[in-house]
Amino acid sequence: MTEIVDLRIAQVHEAYADGRETPESLIAKLRTQALAQGQFNAWIHLLSEEELQVYLDALKLKPMEESPLWGIPFAIKDNIDLKNVPTSAGCEAFTYTPEQSATVVDLLIDAGAIPLGKTNLDQFATGLVGTRSPYGEGKNVFNPDYISGGSSAGSAIATALGQVSFALGTDTAGSGRVPAAFNNLIGHKPTKGLLSTCGVVPACKSLDCVSIFALTTEDAVQVFDVATLADDNDPYSRKNIAFNTQPYWSDKKPRAFNYGIPAQLEFDDAHAEKLFHHACEQLDALGGQSVTLDFEPFMKTARLLYEGPWVAERAWATQDVSPDAMLPVIQDILATTQNFAVTDVFDAQYKLQALKRICDRELDKVDFVMTPTTPTCYLRSEIAEQPVALNSKLGTYTNFMNLLDYAATAIPVGRLSSQVSWGVTLFSRAFTDIRLLSFAGALQRQLNLPLGATPHSLHPQPVESARTAPEESVAVVVCGAHLSGQPLNWQLQDRGATFKMKTRTTQAYALFALPDGKRPALVQKEAGCAIEVEVWQMPMAEFGSFVAGIPSPLGIGKVALETGESLPGFICEEGGIADAQDISHFGGWRAYLAEK
Image 1 (cartoon, helix red, strand yellow):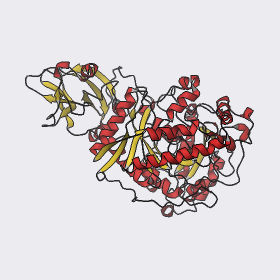
Image 2 (cartoon, helix red, strand yellow):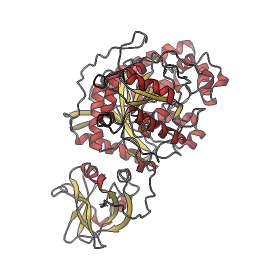
Image 3 (tube, rainbow, N blue to C red):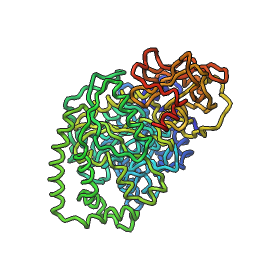
Image 4 (cartoon, one colour):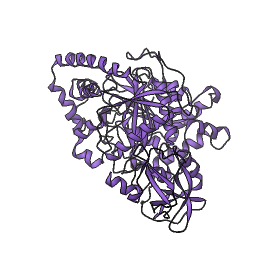
């Protein structure tokens, strides 16, 4: 496995400054890595060494201190033009070679960024699955049996695998957010028009956005700042008026705020539901107050996108392409335009305008809204069986966003039982991009979540296989949400921890369910009982970040086991069980959940 380099923008610049890397050495490593990881189908056109040399030579003429993205590698979805490199939009018969780059690509290159190539996508950016490509199905970086999400599949895969620092996608109905959720990335869908779509193959021209995949919100902000431009060559371009916003902040905790959650929530996965409520708890810990919103108007808007005449805009964008050159599923989608009369376009616009007034009033109650990004993630085989129905399911919480002219940031919050990443989306009115990224960054820090893929998470070990402890490691006793198969177990596996054994404490402990009903508290008690626990062996280098993410009133202390060992593990702070329920008689957290 090729070593995965830390490609956060600041870390790349540090590596350049202290001489550990040069742009030439880094780009060579990343190109080799991209070739070695070809099984994920991230790329359609990886630039050759000769093509890359043009950008490396140009970089020598740019002062590093005046170029905010100097030497930073990035990927470009293959419906966005890069000068002298073919643009396919996922269709060989459509392919052309542009003489100019898209405006947004030019801005990034002018700032010193280096394009590594053009990435795979659902054909003509039509889909949220990543499997609708003649260049191979995009595969999830954590479990290749599952979808990567689309249509910006390759851009998300390349970023998650550590082949680039960031990537450009497009987002008409969720294509910049769904792949981010499934591949453990930040996915920002800007306010419509803030990033020019000049040089972008349209899907729905009036709705399209260029989106950003990044490893952190800080990186997303840097790219956003460079890429934002009012462009006379794009009739939908807008100046960033940034109502009621402020510069990006990175304080540990924001000021008190209100956030909306839908009254109507739809999940296809129990783990996803648990992770959503865990994200709510973390926002509460940051000073947030949840407000339940009527979400039916948003859902009605979402249904307008694919059940209404906007599909005719996709047909307009591909009118010069023979249907025979398209994948069958794309042909079927575009054929639905025959179901609409001309007057249906205006009928849908009038419905949309009425719904927007209602939705805007709901937004006025909060600083932002948080939803699941998707109800769940699907196997590639499931998508093959139900390509349209499951694709529509994936858009449950994404399809309305551009119709209502909102900005949105997707952030992963944990792993499903399949080990696939899953996440939430924060959204608000147009021009609130920086505030959304600020709140998303605060949530990311609160979750203590490493983004992208790691060598450990790319090759997860079987949970029940005992292994010899590695050198410089520490045993950790867990008793609740970090147990095997529980929602936060991925936090152990991502840090390279391996399962050691299942055992019990000595008969000197009590177990309490904290008031939120989602976490247990292990407390020493003289006349107690034995509580079921697990022991995991974690690399010492990862232990600090793991402990830093433990929320109050829990902490780490010594736990006495029936094996005679006394090991570091989860315990509860004194006074932390004031309103907690004693569940010791169940003998462990799993047994309590089974009876709950």
